[in-house]
Length: 582
Image (cartoon, one colour):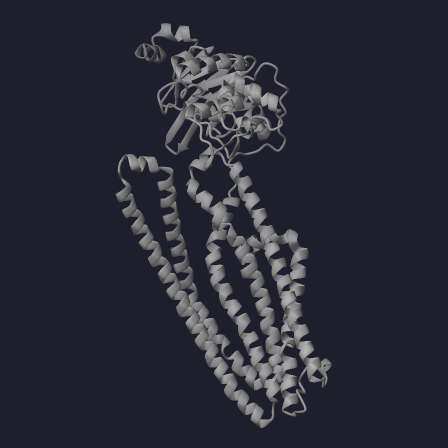
């Protein structure tokens, strides 16, 4: 019940549609109850029986053409009501699904890097694209189907009892063995379905990895080995699905056998009832029709059990995401910073951070960056440079210590306002599906075409963009035009130009550029840095020496800080690095 409450919470906004759906379900049940009676009256009239005394009073003793016309009208109305009911249910189910999808996407956009790296990206993607359908399944084929099937079952029992209590007892006698069968097979079907879905997921994951790393596999001539591993997983998926379907077929055979025994009992007792004159032949036909309708909700209830078992895991996995508390605490009353005119000061005070307990990535960092200053973070790979950079826009929060901007603890600022003041260029500048112009406007969505092109010129990207098939309107990303690493990096730099933020964070801004392009970008960076606070992670000496000061990190600790010339004279880590690079 807890799971159903959690799922139906996403459908509360659609309560008017739910009321309409329930009303349509009641109307469909009533029309279903009326459908057999015209046939019964026609049969009894043809046999010359005064008849069908237990029929609804408004039928009277109408003529056969009238009864046939009524049968046609009721059948058409029943079909129409069922069609509208299904349309309402599908629309309502999709509305709730859209809300859950939006909530999961919003949750994903708010993830900190620590939490993102703590989960498998493929698992999050699977939950957000496939597990999420469990909400619609539980609503449409679970909860609502249970309510309508139960209501139909009660209505059928009452009407059948009015026709003949003995035959009704025979029909109801099939319910206990059916419930036992549902319980007996239910857990097995659920377990086998879960196993089959898991095997399919592994197969899909293997295929995705092969597509992503095909050049590597081909370069090492590993195609045969990979094909063998894929074949093993395909065999496992086949076996899992085969076990699942064998269990389902056995269940359907058992349910069919129970219904067959019940139907045979009804026919046997019904013939005796007709011969004894307790009911007419027409009424017996009505009872048989009701018997089919009686078994239909039982079938639905049995399917609900299997459906809920299969969908429960998916809904639970999605709810696990949505119910996770936010890792980044947000202030109740955020502090508003004044408009920056020459960059913003940034201060790290006793900062400690680790991606996992006992393995610090940063230890005791005390560093101040003045407003408008450019500082280069240097050190060996894994020293914590990029981690330190990610603390500024609160992609990560320190485990202890404080990061301040203009003297204010970052945790006291509005997160969106903080990130508007920070332009970030990561080591790899990804391209989202869309045009070049769309990707550049990630820096500022309202930028004009002229501003977009000006930013591209500053980043030395305009020339190669103009050479693309559609220029700035060229579609890039998966399945479209692909750019080189260096071209993508210049697109990322152009985004930073376009954002025009007072704080600039650059992670290896020239690492993928040739010497000529590096010279051009360094000149552009000099302009971009003017009036901005800049922190950049760099390894190339040409870029390092453009900084006002250098901060050397090693094993998460700050070793030395100072102007390039002073650090060279001190003979420390930076001086040794400079000497090793000639």
